[in-house]
Amino acid sequence: MKLGVFGGTFDPIHKGHVAVCQYVLSFLSLDSILFIPARNPRLRDEKLPQATSKQRLEMVKIALREQSQFQVSDIELDRCGPSYTVDTLKEINNKFNSVSNDVYLIVGSDVINRFHQWHEYETILISNRLIVYGRPGYKEPQQLPNKLAKYKERIQFVNGPEYGFSATSIRNALSDGERNIDGLTPDVEDYIKKEKIYVEEKQ
Image (spheres, helix red, strand yellow):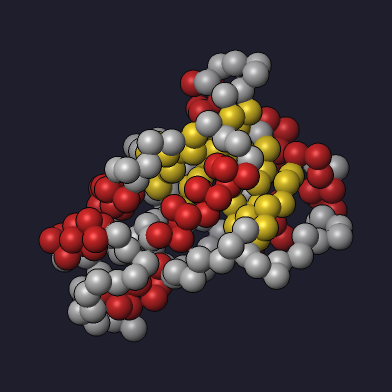
């Protein structure tokens, strides 16, 4: 089984998240992709998510209702203490205890230059494959950062279409009272408005 793992804040999940994973699923012939909402973002300067963990999890579930090859896990939301990707991947690998199983961690191209700052990044690369999704025009670096170079066989760059959606822009639109927002599915937008998420966000 070839399993993709796609983590994110998903504050909120938007069509771009889903489209990227649809592309990677097809391009790499993966069997399934597991969406994992992060409890708190790490190595980011952004503020904490405005939507609660429960709300973000529910939005992901709603967005993926019609996607039979996508699954959702609350594995990080239930964890006590610091939540690291390496621990999540260890749990996933233990669950799919098979020598023939491949786990593919999907990240954006903005991550690669600081991936060596991730907690136990070497363990991640030894036990899993790293898929780096680049936007149109993104060029695979001729040379990886020194600490990643010896793992180059575990890292694959995938250039796919650009999906011009931004969670920040979507939150801004919601806080301005806009409706029928292009980056959201109608069901996710309905849930956001029912729960009154983002309405108090000030820019």
